[in-house]
Length: 130
Image (cartoon, rainbow, N blue to C red; front, side, top):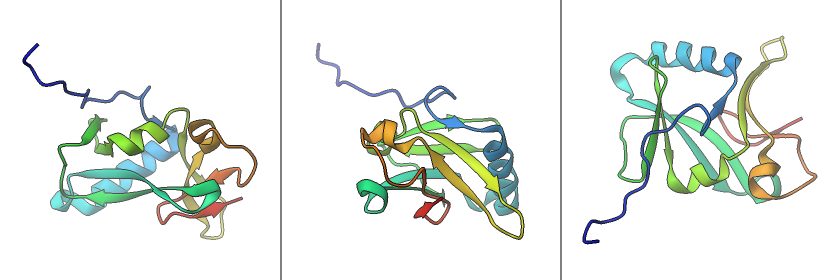
């Protein structure tokens, strides 16, 4: 009983739901940045749709609070707080044509227990889309 409790730091695709289109785009973006970055970080912050905004950025550092999804092509870092808000959320990449393409976080209200508001929330730069 003297051992400190630890959390699972290795994630699977059942923990982080990334659509095939989003996975392909993430792979492409990660190849473009090369060795400069270690992973793609998923974050959740206050504000935006019903209080939460979902987003992604490149990360060059893993923290002790991060769990990691290693796809083989790239890694995804998610801290324990953000991971709690990712349950039931799908990360997708939508190309509407005419230069309008972005990552969207679908079904965010399942994760936060809310209803109504925007159907998709977040993008690589945060915010809401319709």
